[in-house]
Length: 280
Ligand code: C2E
Ligand code: MG
Ligand code: MG
Ligand code: MG
Image (cartoon, rainbow, N blue to C red; front, top):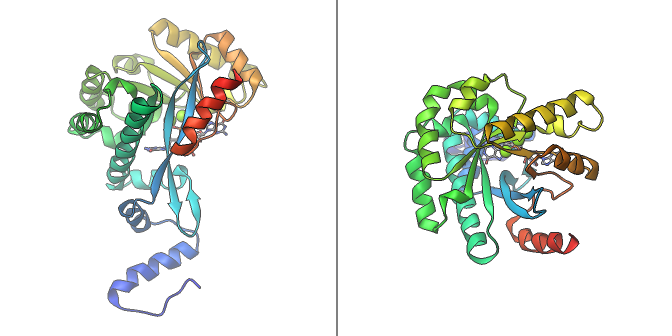
């Protein structure tokens, strides 16, 4: 049922797209259309403060709700979008939704921080700080509620180039986090010059830290180093109570993972918060 009858010129690209789609491929044109139709939406995954045992925020994770295929994970389209200017449109949509949602939570529900993933390309744009501040003003969200996560690999691509934009964001109170920390080959000296306030320890170390002595040493070393540098640590991929407990002992600040909560839709957040607080 994939192939249609009409062969008008304007239908040709649609047809080619459908053929690609039948073969399981995702094209830039499909993604562009999805962005225009706002088929991208955000799921939110809670952040638990290990000291207060409270949910202090959530990370926005983009999902492509494909009408036929169902949800497509970001790993299947973000790398493709990053190769073209499309990532700009994806980022604009993500920012608009995440800032609006965080503003609603802060107005009506609870003081929550919002962590948003950024591609290197988005922050290479010198107008980016002004764009995000305009959004914050529009929705009356305090910029200090925002944490931007940038992968270690992206941050290291051109640290000098990023310096200007990152510094301007930081001066407005926005926090910056190095995502997937430990997986890149960064020079700490260089990373240190950028105004980051958080290290997010990669899931590959966290999820294996009880089974592998090496992983545990890596996690411990990152936490110790971050503390000495005055940076907050977030552990991603926390799936068991033993790992959560060990992270607390090691002095990790914040945990995220399936144990605490899976990525969920915005309407699921209020009852999640209620249930979580009640279970404590
Ligand atoms: P990330 O920022 O490192 O996000 C964490 C990923 O780990 C998420 O996958 C999350 O669902 C998953 N995860 C969280 N807890 C657990 C756990 O306990 N166990 C396991 N196995 N996995 C867990 P997701 O949502 O598929 O996102 C994948 C990556 O896509 C993200 O990695 C991020 O780099 C990127 N991404 C997501 N949303 C955006 C976005 O809006 N913009 C950009 N540029 N990248 C995004
Ligand atoms: Mg992230
Ligand atoms: Mg990460
Ligand atoms: Mg990761």
